[in-house]
Amino acid sequence: MRIANLPWYDFAELTVATDAFWRGVRRHLVAQGVDDLPETLDRKTPHAEQWRRSELLLSQACGYDVLYDAAADLQVVATPRFDAEGCEGSCYRSAIVVRAGDHVRDLRDLRGRVAVVNEASSHSGTNAFRPLVAPLARNGRFFSAVFVSGDHVSSLEMVADGRADVACVDVVVIELCRQVRPQSLAGLEILQLTAPAPAPPYVTSARTPPELVAALRRALQSAMTDPTMTPARSALCVGGVDLLPPDAYSSLAAFEAPALAHGYFELPAPNLSPVRTPASRDAPPAFRVRSRCTAR
Image 1 (cartoon, rainbow, N blue to C red):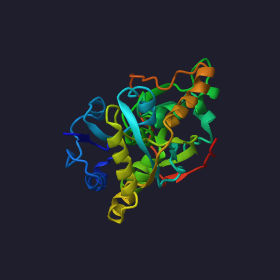
Image 2: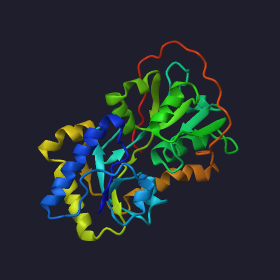
Image 3: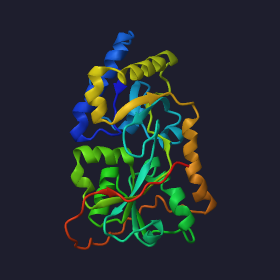
């Protein structure tokens, strides 16, 4: 049996929408004569393990994964277009998030503070952050500590409760939090946005035959215009898909160039020592966007 999973933005509050999205894609695959399709998404097996299996039909990955760590295991099927602030076409950005009222006017004010990233292999949480921080570093250091939280929502929580002072967070995650977890954004604000990059792609096994990859692409394209799938697409902020050139995700390597030029390797650098106790403060103000950067 083939495997399908859509793990990237599968919040607990959105599983109904994610399941409906898969059922719609599956229906369009069946219409093309594709069989041996799973009825449901496999949420039990870790996605990194699924990526290594030849039975993988559909998943989603970070562009950094398809460029590096999982390049031998995955191939890109299509790139989603997200309906979220900071997304343009098939590109997305990350937001540099700080606490409101923390007197942080720009990144330079964060020297010697604590940063948190979601994962070492994340473009949105780590790689997109590097070119902004690298020119500010001294002798390869800018922060007093860098922690790895495991996911973007946990990074937001760490900034909100004072265990960290800044995080770099996928803007799609922020938009979904606005919709279903607004409390996770309380007391936070966006300092600036990162440069745009191709959004996390839908992927399949590198061993999926070309004719099945073509069927997947047609099914995803049909799913984006299927009126019965409008509620699921809206809930997941998916507005369409694009078929990008095979080398599109190689552009993520350019984000590393400033870090290499400045000898900056601090991100990520997990510091396992205890974090400082958060200071008490008044009730948090509403989440807001401080400023926006332009594409470059």
